[in-house]
Amino acid sequence: MSNQGEQPVIDKLTAWAKAKPDIRAVILTSSRAKPNATLDEFSDYDVIFVAEDIKPYLQDESWLDEFGRVLVVYRDPVEIRFGFERFIRVTQYETGLKIDFTLWPVDLLKHVSQMKQLPDYIDDGYRILLDKDRLMQGMKTPSCRAFVPKPPTEVEYRNFIEECFSDVPYAVKQIRRGDYFPLQFTFHLMRCQKLAKLLEWKVEIEHGWSLKGAYYGKGLQKYLDPKLFTEIENTYAGYGFEANWESLSRIIKLFSRIAKEVGERMGYNYPEELETRILKYLQKVKGGELP
Image 1 (cartoon, one colour):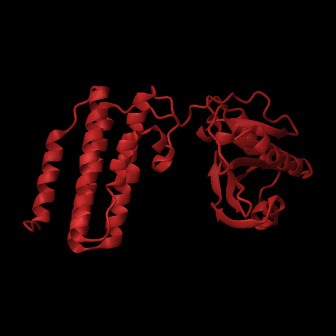
Image 2 (cartoon, rainbow, N blue to C red; image 1 turned 30 degrees about the horizontal axis):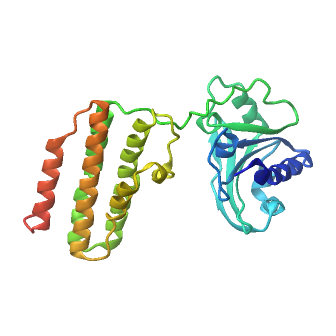
Image 3 (cartoon, helix red, strand yellow; image 1 turned 180 degrees about the vertical axis):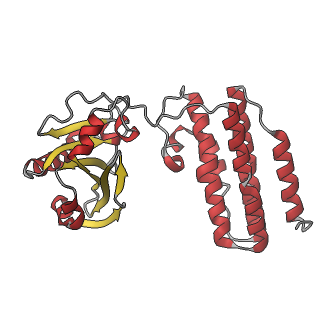
């Protein structure tokens, strides 16, 4: 997305803050504050409003309406950061505009401005839209690498493999019970947390550990071979005893292949004996030998 598409939003945020005597600074963070970030019409605006007192904005949310007709709001609870209260209002507008508002007290900004190492969510990238009191003068330049993952050690790699396989006994128990909802949740964890993490490691290896990580595999698809992504899609199954066993089998096979590839490229040993034990256990439960 070009700067022309976002500039009216930036102008509106800045003008609103300029007209509010108690708002002393405005900071844009995350993807829209990073050079060369990939943006589209759904990319949200992560904005920090720095106020003399955040409580009025917490108690009366009518200010959210000043940026458009609100569709829905997600309210994070008040949190303590570096000894100061702050809160977030994730706001979706009917126009499609989405703004994640964070309210900081002035003293929190003063503290962050003096830090030798910025918090990750600031170090990931920020742009100063307004600073009435020059509070951010001298604030450390963001590295824009805060969320780029580091390669796992071999111990971390092997522990993660075991963590992934620890989901299998839950899945086989739930299939045998015909317990649909817990099973689908387990499948979700296996795909969107465990397999996604392995795929993230694979992609990072291929790109020199330079890409920003993301929750639940966000953005991974564009880096994957279409055939591999088709394999991932094929791990999903309809409801039914045999269909669920097949789904679990495909998840394990795909997981095993990617884990071995990652381990080989990093010079780590894949725990073959663990996989063998897990597969034997699976077959015994499926065949009715256990429990």
